[in-house]
Length: 258
Image 1 (tube, rainbow, N blue to C red):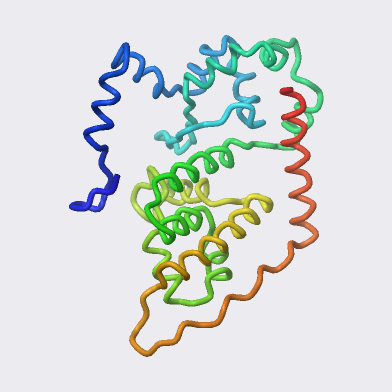
Image 2 (image 1 turned 180 degrees about the horizontal axis):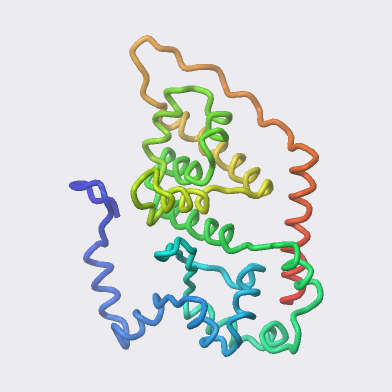
């Protein structure tokens, strides 16, 4: 819930009491929120580290957090409970214990597919949207994953754009602005797949419509609100081809899992 005094967020006392009243507290609660890295995650699923990394790159398992180590390498973290549930499902046995990775997956890995950043962005975006307290907060949560040029193209009014930036969350673990660590974190936070960008743009456009209607952005007295923004331009042939490739990958993974 919002912390009206300090601008952060707090947990209601009733929620803490609810958690404490559950059976096997705190062990069960600690297990639900336990996160593991690649090596420990492979142990949880009883598979080699290399196979775990390949499955994560293909989006079969999704990270919930990340941080940069002292060498500025990205360390992805996963919910142990999710990994245990995935490994316990007999339908996933071929993916985990087959002698070789399926040919289709090998081809995707050879092409350099890595869905870990995109999957993390999807999870973090859902978290930000769940904690948003109003239309501008929701719009800011979506804008957090688009680069400034995309936002400027969508939100033409400078007063609206300035107001939107007030609600745009900063990347987690950003560090000092302008440093290599901060730049790498911002790169991970920013959508780079054409299909992902297109969906974010459409969602942000709808969120901005709601925000304008329910709570217009403040502007100087006498300043008139501009007309409705221009419609979104259709995707380029390159963007359309990339979206088709991404849809094919995700559909192939879902069929394989089934």
